[in-house]
Length: 264
Image (cartoon, rainbow, N blue to C red; front, top):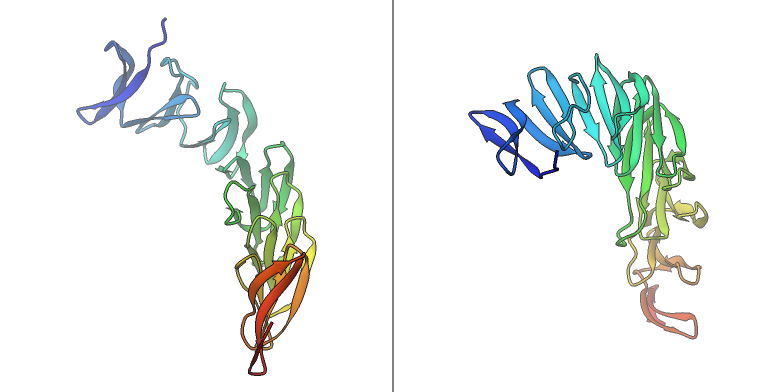
């Protein structure tokens, strides 16, 4: 049969599918029809049924729920989830409590275990997980990271290859830019890079967002700066936050205020 583009159409509170020439591709027996993962997904009182774009059955039965990405479709039956590819090949049997997708990450929950599969097909096991979140720096078009939070509220960070950037020991993790991460435990904060290397020791009361290329620091009521470019730390001894005046010959000139006096 010649492939003709079709579209959902609603008639008398029922949804069906017509080819552009008016011939019926799917009967008007469904409550809703939507497109996902190259398939038509039709919903009725029995659940969800799946059809190819030509209107042929993709699976012969109905399912309770589904979740889809560009590569996979997760289906729920009898309270358990399984994973299929878009051709209908069963990849993971009906044994998971839930299956979902975070961007291009595959997330499978089974009991107290959570499994995350990354785009390079590396799979990691994360027991006792409270939450997962995809985060990225304010810089545009930069890689994202997977923020992991355990039941004890401790947080860690993985890169897109499934490699640990920060172990799950931190109370706070914030991406400041494409290379800088602010971390905190208790009342103390420090600075790491996206390779997990320490840049500023965790001994500061506050670490601000990057401003004019510098990271503001606060300790004991005094202000300092960290210069990511030169890796130079200007100690927190100033009454006000130092302001960058210029860079000359690889050196930084700051305007500062200390003990009531201004200086450079």
